[in-house]
Image 1 (tube, rainbow, N blue to C red):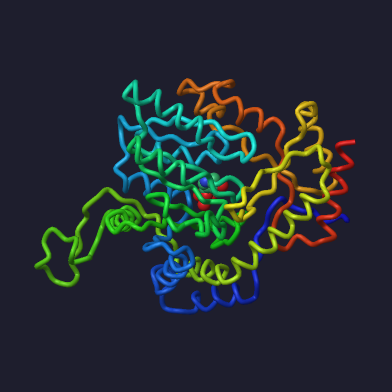
Image 2 (tube, rainbow, N blue to C red):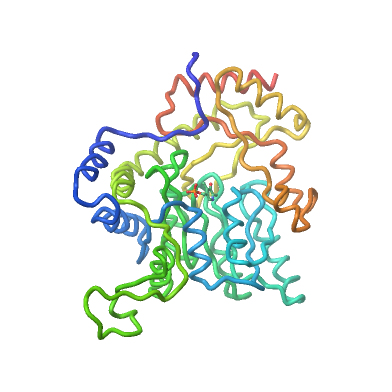
Length: 386
Ligand SMILES: *Cc1c(COP(=O)(O)O)cnc(C)c1O
């Protein structure tokens, strides 16, 4: 097998292509009817009251923080085991960022560490305004506990579900916002469904939705119910906030809506692939523990080398790459990035996320991965361990 097998890739059908072409030939290629259609499909799928699509999950995280009024003097907490966007959104707003270590079995936010840190923060008057749990690899965090703690300690919750569209938690779709204020999805091509670049913010709150819509588009509105002066002519608009241009285009929305029709099929295939990995991979490898209350969307399939092989991670990475298998590493802990070290974070601050990082590899996981390709991947990994 000589073809390169990436760790993740998009799955675009002729129907997806036709959907985009149809919009490109129409009168509106940016703000036409497809934006609203995509939003409606997403909120119906997740059973959330509102959805605002944006040009990336990064933008979605930013306006979610703005909608909550996050600013200077506030704290935002998230996990080190994520993409930098999960914490950068706090910095965009002038807030301070801190981290909560992960659970060594689920690789998600550890709720015991969260509770401990909250108790300490309460004493020092440094409680967070916002906590961002990240559903790593497509597996929901323990939202029940995080939600209970949010009521006790008075913080808001933004779920970073960039990996988890199509996943389920306690019988509800991720994105239902039953345990949070807002949920963010990413539609980057390596994620589960794609719109090229793109993202979404879901919420059940009318007030947050109104603010999200403003921040997404310059802080400007024509909605009569929002205008300070609503006695004006039809052309009239007002700027009410300092917003941005984070809009998604119509042809991207058409692609996203078309992809969404196959979301359940994608999740099904990803779970079949995960099952085969679980059955056939060397028993010494640790994988993410998925509880019975969750359906993982399996954006990623990560393997953790046994502790005694920690030193061999880079060698195995290279071995796999040389065999045209596009393994990857998710994630280098955010707090160890040079930019974050400037704030005083250092190696040793979040030992579980750091130990996880040193032993982790993401192996190919995408809906069109063939059975033959997967067998090749398994054979090479098991062989590499020796
Ligand atoms: C991909 C990703 C993002 C950013 O998504 P974009 O759509 O590329 O902006 C944010 N958080 C997590 C956890 C991600 O994996």
